[in-house]
Image (cartoon, rainbow, N blue to C red; front, side):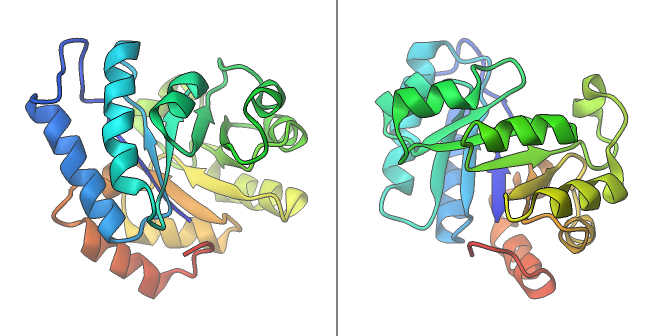
Length: 215
Protein backbone atom coordinates (compact mmCIF):
# COMPACT_ATOMS: atom_id res chain seq x y z
CA UNK A 1 0.00 0.00 0.00
CA UNK A 2 1.34 3.41 -0.96
CA UNK A 3 -0.38 6.27 0.84
CA UNK A 4 0.13 9.89 -0.22
CA UNK A 5 -0.79 12.48 2.39
CA UNK A 6 -1.14 16.05 1.17
CA UNK A 7 1.03 18.68 2.82
CA UNK A 8 -1.61 21.07 4.12
CA UNK A 9 -0.27 24.00 2.10
CA UNK A 10 -3.73 25.46 1.45
CA UNK A 11 -4.95 28.27 3.70
CA UNK A 12 -8.24 29.78 4.79
CA UNK A 13 -7.96 32.04 1.73
CA UNK A 14 -7.21 29.32 -0.84
CA UNK A 15 -9.58 29.04 -3.79
CA UNK A 16 -9.66 26.79 -6.88
CA UNK A 17 -7.61 29.32 -8.85
CA UNK A 18 -4.91 29.58 -6.15
CA UNK A 19 -1.46 28.22 -6.98
CA UNK A 20 -1.35 25.93 -3.94
CA UNK A 21 -4.75 24.48 -4.89
CA UNK A 22 -3.68 23.85 -8.48
CA UNK A 23 -0.35 22.39 -7.32
CA UNK A 24 -2.24 19.90 -5.18
CA UNK A 25 -4.39 18.89 -8.15
CA UNK A 26 -1.26 18.35 -10.27
CA UNK A 27 0.11 16.07 -7.58
CA UNK A 28 -3.14 14.12 -7.43
CA UNK A 29 -3.13 13.64 -11.21
CA UNK A 30 0.43 12.31 -11.09
CA UNK A 31 -0.46 10.00 -8.21
CA UNK A 32 -3.52 8.61 -9.95
CA UNK A 33 -1.63 8.06 -13.20
CA UNK A 34 1.02 6.18 -11.20
CA UNK A 35 -1.68 4.08 -9.50
CA UNK A 36 -0.90 5.06 -5.94
CA UNK A 37 -3.14 3.15 -3.53
CA UNK A 38 -4.49 5.94 -1.34
CA UNK A 39 -4.55 9.72 -1.15
CA UNK A 40 -5.45 11.62 2.01
CA UNK A 41 -6.58 15.22 1.78
CA UNK A 42 -4.98 16.62 4.92
CA UNK A 43 -5.77 20.28 4.32
CA UNK A 44 -6.55 21.32 7.87
CA UNK A 45 -6.57 25.07 7.22
CA UNK A 46 -9.37 25.01 4.66
CA UNK A 47 -12.85 26.03 5.81
CA UNK A 48 -15.45 23.28 5.43
CA UNK A 49 -16.95 24.82 2.29
CA UNK A 50 -13.57 25.01 0.56
CA UNK A 51 -12.60 21.53 1.72
CA UNK A 52 -15.83 20.23 0.19
CA UNK A 53 -15.03 21.95 -3.12
CA UNK A 54 -11.54 20.46 -3.12
CA UNK A 55 -12.87 17.00 -2.28
CA UNK A 56 -15.32 17.17 -5.18
CA UNK A 57 -12.51 18.10 -7.57
CA UNK A 58 -10.12 15.43 -6.33
CA UNK A 59 -12.76 12.70 -6.20
CA UNK A 60 -13.51 13.41 -9.87
CA UNK A 61 -9.86 12.59 -10.59
CA UNK A 62 -9.77 9.39 -8.54
CA UNK A 63 -13.19 7.98 -9.38
CA UNK A 64 -13.00 4.83 -11.48
CA UNK A 65 -9.23 4.45 -10.95
CA UNK A 66 -7.13 2.21 -8.70
CA UNK A 67 -6.59 5.13 -6.31
CA UNK A 68 -8.94 5.70 -3.38
CA UNK A 69 -9.48 9.05 -1.70
CA UNK A 70 -9.74 9.79 2.03
CA UNK A 71 -10.39 13.10 3.79
CA UNK A 72 -8.66 13.84 7.08
CA UNK A 73 -11.05 13.79 10.06
CA UNK A 74 -14.17 15.00 8.20
CA UNK A 75 -16.27 11.95 7.37
CA UNK A 76 -19.21 14.21 6.52
CA UNK A 77 -17.22 16.16 3.94
CA UNK A 78 -15.78 12.94 2.55
CA UNK A 79 -19.21 11.43 1.97
CA UNK A 80 -20.73 14.63 0.59
CA UNK A 81 -17.78 15.26 -1.72
CA UNK A 82 -17.67 11.77 -3.19
CA UNK A 83 -14.52 10.51 -1.46
CA UNK A 84 -14.08 6.85 -0.57
CA UNK A 85 -13.64 7.39 3.14
CA UNK A 86 -12.01 9.18 6.04
CA UNK A 87 -8.75 9.12 7.95
CA UNK A 88 -9.40 9.57 11.67
CA UNK A 89 -6.97 11.25 14.04
CA UNK A 90 -6.54 10.71 17.77
CA UNK A 91 -9.01 13.58 18.29
CA UNK A 92 -11.66 12.31 15.86
CA UNK A 93 -14.78 10.31 16.60
CA UNK A 94 -14.08 6.65 17.25
CA UNK A 95 -14.08 4.44 14.20
CA UNK A 96 -16.98 2.37 15.49
CA UNK A 97 -19.24 5.44 15.47
CA UNK A 98 -18.17 6.38 11.96
CA UNK A 99 -18.70 2.82 10.75
CA UNK A 100 -22.25 2.73 12.09
CA UNK A 101 -23.04 6.11 10.56
CA UNK A 102 -21.47 5.62 7.12
CA UNK A 103 -21.68 1.88 6.47
CA UNK A 104 -19.37 -0.95 5.54
CA UNK A 105 -18.36 0.41 2.13
CA UNK A 106 -16.88 3.57 3.68
CA UNK A 107 -13.10 3.24 3.98
CA UNK A 108 -11.77 4.11 7.46
CA UNK A 109 -8.13 4.63 8.35
CA UNK A 110 -7.01 5.55 11.86
CA UNK A 111 -3.84 7.23 13.13
CA UNK A 112 -2.21 5.23 15.95
CA UNK A 113 0.95 5.51 18.02
CA UNK A 114 0.73 2.57 20.44
CA UNK A 115 -0.32 -1.07 20.46
CA UNK A 116 -3.44 -0.25 22.48
CA UNK A 117 -4.52 2.38 19.94
CA UNK A 118 -4.12 -0.11 17.11
CA UNK A 119 -6.26 -2.62 18.99
CA UNK A 120 -8.99 0.00 19.45
CA UNK A 121 -8.83 0.82 15.73
CA UNK A 122 -9.14 -2.84 14.76
CA UNK A 123 -11.98 -3.50 17.19
CA UNK A 124 -13.73 -0.38 15.93
CA UNK A 125 -13.88 -1.92 12.45
CA UNK A 126 -11.30 0.35 10.85
CA UNK A 127 -9.93 -0.91 7.54
CA UNK A 128 -6.33 -0.09 8.45
CA UNK A 129 -4.21 2.00 10.80
CA UNK A 130 -1.16 4.15 10.29
CA UNK A 131 1.48 3.60 12.97
CA UNK A 132 4.20 6.02 13.93
CA UNK A 133 6.09 8.19 13.87
CA UNK A 134 8.48 5.47 12.74
CA UNK A 135 11.52 7.71 12.35
CA UNK A 136 12.27 11.17 13.70
CA UNK A 137 10.41 13.89 11.83
CA UNK A 138 9.76 17.51 12.90
CA UNK A 139 6.05 17.38 12.07
CA UNK A 140 5.51 14.51 14.55
CA UNK A 141 7.46 15.75 17.58
CA UNK A 142 4.19 16.37 19.44
CA UNK A 143 3.53 12.62 19.40
CA UNK A 144 6.71 11.81 21.30
CA UNK A 145 9.77 9.79 20.40
CA UNK A 146 9.76 7.66 17.23
CA UNK A 147 8.32 4.17 17.74
CA UNK A 148 11.18 2.61 15.77
CA UNK A 149 11.42 -0.50 13.64
CA UNK A 150 11.42 -2.98 16.53
CA UNK A 151 8.12 -1.73 17.94
CA UNK A 152 6.61 -1.58 14.46
CA UNK A 153 7.57 -5.21 13.92
CA UNK A 154 6.13 -6.32 17.26
CA UNK A 155 2.80 -4.56 16.72
CA UNK A 156 2.46 -5.61 13.08
CA UNK A 157 3.05 -9.27 13.86
CA UNK A 158 0.88 -9.23 17.00
CA UNK A 159 -2.14 -7.90 15.11
CA UNK A 160 -1.65 -9.54 11.69
CA UNK A 161 -3.47 -9.69 9.34
CA UNK A 162 -4.84 -6.26 10.31
CA UNK A 163 -3.15 -3.82 7.91
CA UNK A 164 -0.60 -1.53 9.54
CA UNK A 165 0.87 1.30 7.46
CA UNK A 166 4.14 2.85 8.60
CA UNK A 167 4.19 6.66 8.91
CA UNK A 168 6.63 9.34 9.99
CA UNK A 169 10.05 10.21 8.63
CA UNK A 170 9.73 7.88 5.66
CA UNK A 171 11.36 10.26 3.22
CA UNK A 172 13.49 7.80 1.22
CA UNK A 173 12.86 4.50 -0.54
CA UNK A 174 15.44 2.91 1.75
CA UNK A 175 13.37 3.81 4.80
CA UNK A 176 10.25 2.50 3.07
CA UNK A 177 12.05 -0.80 2.51
CA UNK A 178 13.02 -0.96 6.18
CA UNK A 179 9.42 -0.39 7.22
CA UNK A 180 8.03 -3.12 4.98
CA UNK A 181 10.76 -5.55 6.03
CA UNK A 182 9.74 -4.87 9.64
CA UNK A 183 6.19 -5.99 8.90
CA UNK A 184 4.32 -2.92 7.65
CA UNK A 185 1.76 -3.54 4.93
CA UNK A 186 2.66 -0.25 3.29
CA UNK A 187 4.05 3.23 3.78
CA UNK A 188 2.41 6.63 4.19
CA UNK A 189 4.29 9.86 3.58
CA UNK A 190 4.12 13.52 2.70
CA UNK A 191 7.67 14.37 1.62
CA UNK A 192 8.42 11.11 -0.18
CA UNK A 193 5.45 11.66 -2.49
CA UNK A 194 5.18 15.47 -2.64
CA UNK A 195 6.97 16.13 -5.96
CA UNK A 196 4.54 15.59 -8.84
CA UNK A 197 7.30 15.37 -11.45
CA UNK A 198 9.37 12.84 -9.51
CA UNK A 199 6.44 10.83 -8.16
CA UNK A 200 6.16 8.30 -11.04
CA UNK A 201 9.85 7.41 -10.71
CA UNK A 202 9.62 7.25 -6.91
CA UNK A 203 6.77 4.76 -7.14
CA UNK A 204 8.54 2.70 -9.82
CA UNK A 205 11.59 2.52 -7.58
CA UNK A 206 9.49 1.49 -4.60
CA UNK A 207 7.83 -1.25 -6.57
CA UNK A 208 11.17 -2.61 -7.70
CA UNK A 209 12.62 -2.63 -4.19
CA UNK A 210 9.61 -3.34 -2.02
CA UNK A 211 6.83 -5.91 -2.18
CA UNK A 212 3.79 -3.79 -1.39
CA UNK A 213 0.29 -5.15 -0.87
CA UNK A 214 -2.77 -3.89 -2.76
CA UNK A 215 -0.73 -2.66 -5.71
